Image 1: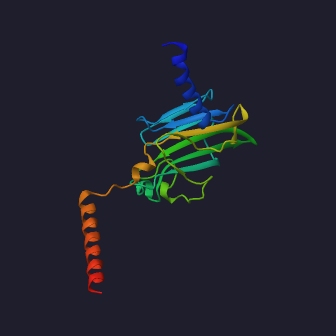
Image 2 (image 1 turned 90 degrees about the vertical axis):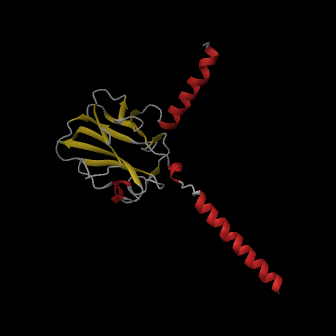
Image 3 (image 1 turned 45 degrees about the vertical axis):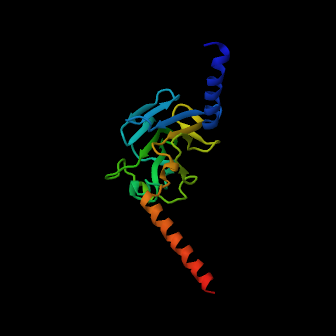
Length: 207
């Protein structure tokens, strides 16, 4: 493959990265395209844990009381509306900070995916979060989506205040939730419309 042939794919990858991650920002990405969930980051010294329904990234000391820094929900209003306690909420990103002696000593990013059993990690069922929580809900597309605002910053232990972009790729596409009528339903609807048309025609004829 020559240089001209390589230019197209490389340019496409560049456009995708620019569209999902602000320039000069530390990045964290969660992907449900694999089982367990995949976590990628360019933050040195970070520790990750993964499972089929949840994943996390931690930096520093993440024990003891924490402060909620950011939370955002991903929703699917189609066929998966009832998952995670209802409300259409499918996934949740939550960022927590741990402070000791006035200094940030720990940071924890947690990604939860549509739990079907008892809530884990101390969070209530996904569908119980209000719609207005942390910048509003984000419709799933099945592609990599930026969950944090473009100008989002956070204090990381040992690094200070840095720009941070957290993205996630869900396992569902909102467009997949649009139901397709069954043939029998369409036939019944057509018969009803035909009958209605015949009745109107008879009324006009009799008048």
